[in-house]
Amino acid sequence: MIIQPTSLAALTWAGAASGASAESWRVGAVLAARTLGYNEQSKLVLQIGALTVEAEPPGTQLPSQFQVRVLSLGAEPKLEILGGAPLEQTVSRALRERLPQQNGYAPLLATLGALAQRPLLRQLPPNLRAALALLEHSIRTPVEISNGAGLKEAVKRSGLFLEAQLAQPQTDLGLLGEDDWKAALLRLAATLDRGGPPPPGSDVETAPPLAQRGLLAQPRVPMPESAQPGEVDSLLVRLHGDVHAALARLEVAQLEAQASGAWMIEIPLQGEGGQDILQLQMTPHEDDPEQPTAWVLGFALDLPRLGPVQGELQLRGLRLSVRLWAQHAETVDKLERGFTELSQQLTASGLLLDQLTCQSGLPQPPNLRSAVLLKATA
Image 1 (tube, rainbow, N blue to C red):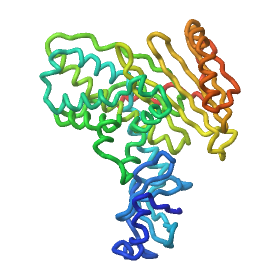
Image 2 (image 1 turned 90 degrees about the vertical axis):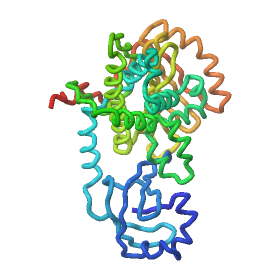
Image 3 (image 1 turned 180 degrees about the vertical axis):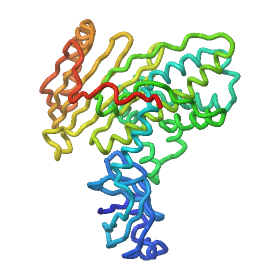
Image 4 (image 1 turned 180 degrees about the horizontal axis):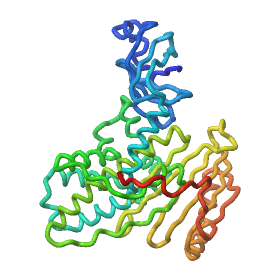
């Protein structure tokens, strides 16, 4: 496996080769290593000894912790992976653990909305109110994602790349902790865990991993009905379970990202009178796997005024094809009325528009497997 230093390691690489790190990085030395995730360029981020490095993803998957032997040094050192279970086994085990626990973001957003309407929310402990406020702050607005830079930032802060960003030496940890969805979920989960036991598991059907199901527009979940005495306590119990289920769902998406070669990203959005979920799927184009500018971007969204909408954008170099689907005929008409302006904007940006259509009804996901993977009754 060829190891390429990150910016931090590159900065100190020459010095490390002749300084204090030289002894540990001598040829034949065995070093402890652990995986930190993947960065936005799909490079594997590793911590090896005292250095954080990038590497091209190996042919076999790696465990979270393992050992390497230094085979050669230089600008691109070569390291031999020693022992440890293949990463495929580690990922499979992690998926088996998290799939029965995961659930979509919609129940969590509904519980948050119900809590926000309770006057007794102001009587909660300050640390819990701060964690709730941080999670609400990490929910994007439609205006924030209405341009390329804003959507890129929302994808970056969706939680899928949290660990990879933590591995980057130039990362502003304070800003990351305030803006990243997973970081906010982890803080709220830790706060709730300190206040009581972990939430019990539920007897629910377990859906397959996200990549196996394909895109799916997710409607809002109705807010819990108001209870009488102890209603905030019951909502906090429900919130506890929803937060852990959302974390498990996000970790399922992270585990799938490398194995499937695609990114399934879910971004909570602050909508009118509630929150919605934008689901994105980014995949290298099957016809041009070696062409870095050939991509397929899919999206799914269910808005109260439009209903379920789904889209697919195929980009090959500067050529773009756009296909949209909407469940309601009136939504199709509304989208088609905006085609002229959209076509002009795409052309002005330098793209060559090959196709722009909208169809009534939603597409059937390709290679759709069973909607239920197992029943979590144990």
